[in-house]
Each structure stands twice: as C-alpha cells, then as structure tokens.
Length: 482
Image (tube, rainbow, N blue to C red):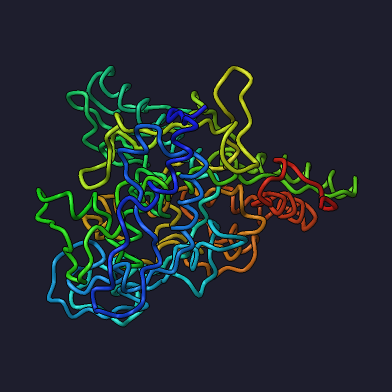
C-alpha cells in the first residue's frame, strides 16, 4: 500500500499537474524545445495527488530521456562535482564529462536500468578536474564499468537497516576494539564515546553506502543527483538552486536554465529505479543440467564464496520509503514528504518474496561490505588485479575510505546476463572474474582453481542462472519459458 493515497479527483487533476511548471524556452533562442514537458512538484507528491504508478512512469521517462541544451544539458561553469570554474567546459567530453545523453545510454543491459558494456565505462574523479582532462590514463581517473540498478530498492533499504543497527550498537557498547554484526555481516570498529574512530568495511560514520562499486553513495537518490550532474550536466534544484548554504544558486552552471530537475523529478526517477524488478533465476529444463546447477550452488558455498556473497539477507520491513533521513545536505531528506511502497506487492515484477517471519528476503549475493581484494605486492604469485587504481590511495577524494579497501562486494544476482565483469568491465568470462580475486578473496579463489574442471563448470553454470528477468515474469523461470 502506498503512503500517498490517491482520490479520483486527484487522478483527474494529474494531466494538469504534470506540467504545473511549464517547460522553459530554449535559452539560446533556438526554435527547439526541451525534452522534458514540465516538472513534478514534491508538495503534490507528498499530498498524495500523484499516483504511485504515474511517479514510476514519469521516472522511467526521465531515465530514458535524451536531454538537450534546452533542458539544461551541460555544465559550462561547473565541474562534475559541482565546483565553480570559468565557463569554458565542453558540452560533451568522454573523460571529464558530461559524457551521456540519457541514463539509459549506459544503464541498458539487458534493458533500461541494467548494466553497461566496456564502451560506456566512466572515468571516476576525472569529472572533478579543472581544467578538464582528455586522458584516460589511470594517473587522472579510475576507469569503472556501469553497474545495473535492478533490485536497487531492496539494496537501498538493506543498507538503511544495517546502518541503523550498526549505529545503535555503537552507542551501547564500551569503548575499544569491537565487532559489530548486522544481518550476519561483521564489521571491525574502534569505538570511543559511542562513535567509531576507526573501521573496516564501512566508513567511520557507520553508514552503509551500497551504491557505486566503491560503496560511496548512501541512497539511490544521492547516487542519482550526483550522476545527473556528472554525466549529463543536469543540475537538481535540491543540490544547487535550493542550497545557498554551500554557495550554490539558481543556474549555478551558467547554461541559461534554472531548475533543471525539480525535487519531484528526482523523486520520480529515484522511485523508478527503486521499483525495478529484482533479478531471479533461469533454471535448465533438463533435469541433469539442473542437478549440475544445484551441485554448483553447494560448491559455491563449500569453497567459501558465500561468506561474502551472501545468498540471502532479510529485510525487517517490506516497505521502501523515499527519501532517506540520512541523506546529506544537498540531497532531499524531508521524511515528512515521503512516499512509501511495498517491495513485495508494488512496482515491476518480479518482486521480493515475503519472508516467513515478516519482512522480505533479498537474494542479492552480497554483504554490502567493502573488502581488500589485493594481495600484498611481496606475496608469491600475488594477484593485484583490483589494485590498479592509482587514485585509490587518495581517499579524501572518495569519501575517506581506508587505502586498502577498494570495492564493495559485487551483487551477483544479475551475473548471468550482466557481462562483462570486473570493476573495469574488461573480463569476458565468470571464470576470469573469480580467478582475479586476491586479498580477502584469495582462499576461495585458490579453492576454485584447485577443483576438477567439472566442478568449476558446475559453479559457473550455477552463477549463469542468476539473471535480470523479463519485466512481469515470476522470480524463477526455466529455459523454455516464454
């Protein structure tokens, strides 16, 4: 059930409200028009005047929209992190960005909302450079592959529940080195005065940040606001127009367009992503092949892969609530204007399954924890695949992560149809992705490598069953399903 209840009168009013803020004229005086037909108003959403399904549909439109200059695409006077600069930046630049017309230009495999191929990699931290850089060298940026957003509503809420649990434990335990455990995941911290002064696997604020490969964004909304500015030069009013305390102002990027994305627009595109279907299983119809997949699943656990890639986690609440109260200044966080929907009943199918004791079961194959996957350089036969980011040591530019923790545990629930693999998307097979694990993943990697060929094949074939499914399908399909 949605918290923003809708009346028949509201349904009749919707077409007028959709364009309550009329589209602006093209600032250059072009006869062209913006792609956006108008803006959603957050007050109307909070008052229950906009149907949930309409919000999701509007969010989908924004996700696939190819923004143009009339919409405010481009940020000539700001960097991709929102810093002011002389207004001479290019409209498009593959490295420092803007680098895409639409969200779906990169998030498109196997359909909008999904992952991306190597060709749409982003160059993280290049967007902060002033002047811009045209180099793709690791000296200037971290080359990263695009991740899929299917099931992201469940991931967002898992992180919120884990955060609340960790922060509550920190206030209750005595000072010193402690292990905080939430949803079966251990985090080593040093506590002083009810706060963490050192931590492993999570930042010292104990906020689990499940988005970005490096785990630096705490919510879909924060991820979305950042991405719109970085990749499109589309500046959300909540970050720029309505945030004068940070020195921002309307038309901060000096492209001639104010209020490029309203608070309501961001709510809609956030809900679209949160309501995307969860990945599921595509199982072989042949009983012998299905038995091999089941054996592969057991072997996956036996060699220790499931210790980080947890096969399932439990949400205490089935409800997704937008926005998140812990969003930082510049990302809307007023929970008095929230929208809520049931992750097991609403949104695109397949949906989460209800847990036996309440809540919901999330089969994402992750622990939402950051790990060190790099062997020390002096180790015999050291595996250093995940250590190739030269900027990884400069953690002040990536939310203060310790220098040895590079990546959050990859969700595997879409691995069967989200190739390529690895943080750069430069691995074409699941086997390669397993064999490059060092550091905390080295023991499981070696155990896999020592298995007979048929056992390794069983594990790979098990992982191939974890896929993004067609919209509207059940959570589990057979290969013959149509």
